[in-house]
Image 1 (cartoon, one colour):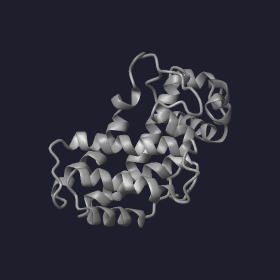
Image 2 (cartoon, one colour):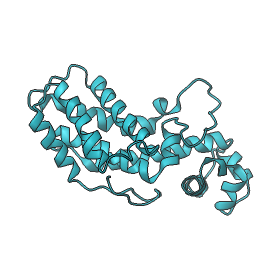
Image 3 (cartoon, one colour):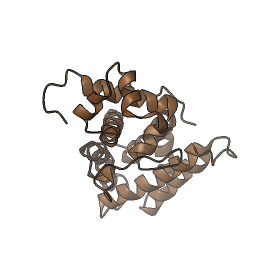
Image 4 (cartoon, one colour):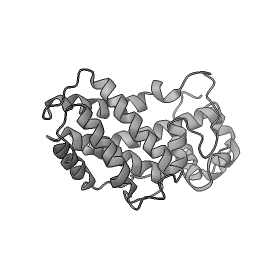
Length: 233
């Protein structure tokens, strides 16, 4: 990878790859096709990234940067439960708008298999500064749960991990259309899971539900470079 001036070339290649990923899926991501989309020769992919796997790594970082920016916009209100669930809905909305990018970000293969980076056996996301910057917002909100009513949070990172797990489990099934039997799967499936999770931490059921309703009332739309706005189903 070159260490010289980029002249915006890496950013243009990432933008081209993001667009192609959204429009055509991962099978379209090749050095030649991405470079052509950006109006360049295929050698620039190797000059600036080293290869397609590294380019995909940069695309993944781009996705986490966007998600982190969206989490930052949620802010820190007096209702940490509402903040956390707003982040959950934000992630769902982002995944629905960018299913292939979401797959790449979280190492999934429900739509395709992504080539690994040369560091075999290492899950990139957990070692990525971009991921950690986004996830820090989740951990921070989980830390604030201890000041929310009667919740007892002995390990905020574990609480964030548990919440992160059930949210992404839901998203994976949602993207695979497993909830078609429900008229409103967010309210019928995701909200009850979130309320049950909070009650397990000591929250009052009615209060936890009210916080989730507050989150449902907050609107969010994917930012620049995503596939477009989607509704929270």
